[in-house]
Length: 78
Image (tube, rainbow, N blue to C red; front, top):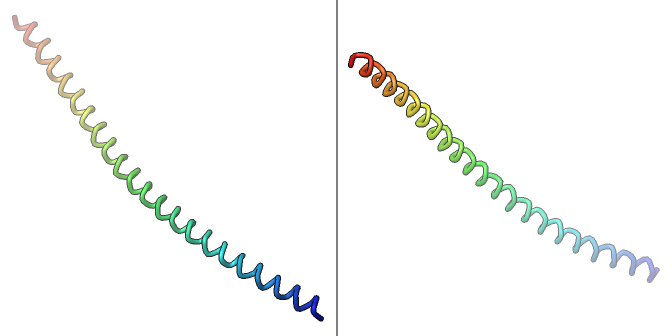
């Protein structure tokens, strides 16, 4: 009977320790998910900035082509 009681006491102790570990793991997991959320937000913002820069580059290219065309037309007129 003492052996059974001792086994149950050990199991209860292990159960408490495991619950404590699970609580810590859940806390860490929550923190990781929050960090992932922040990283995703930053990623979205960076993608927006990249798109803006790509659009600006495209417009610059169009402007350069117009300038080149105007210069060619001027040379022909001269």
